[in-house]
Length: 159
Image 1 (tube, helix red, strand yellow):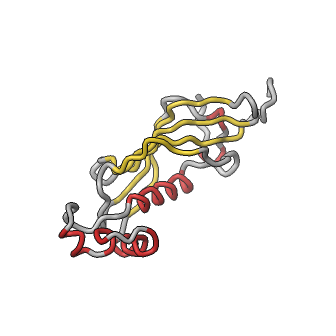
Image 2: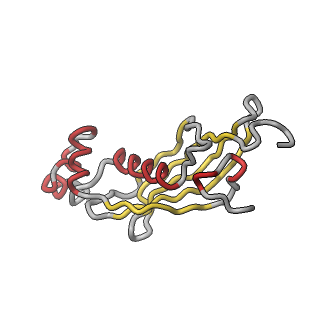
């Protein structure tokens, strides 16, 4: 398969078995606390001392914050504006390890399946294993997602 830069990709450019790793994001204590104040105000996300007293043994990011970071990495490095059509959802979300201040995250996408729509042949659906990996190579979050992309041929046979 010919390499196509992510910004120019269409449905046909994704191959089952393809793995892409991308991004580099350092998590800060300040953003962990700010996110928690706004969206997930549990003590171990809000306060370092409360985190130390918890089963986590220190301040940790909300899992929802981790997913938001992964989404940002996908937007910056994987989702092509030329063909992206959103997502019909995710399955099997797992927060595997806590994310702590100073952790550096990158994203990994593994293409599990690709199916062209029968009812709307101008698009296809990619199923991916989506993961965030920390600086130690440990997976901190994983989920199976689906993404819709326009087809380069626009649904026209022979294009």
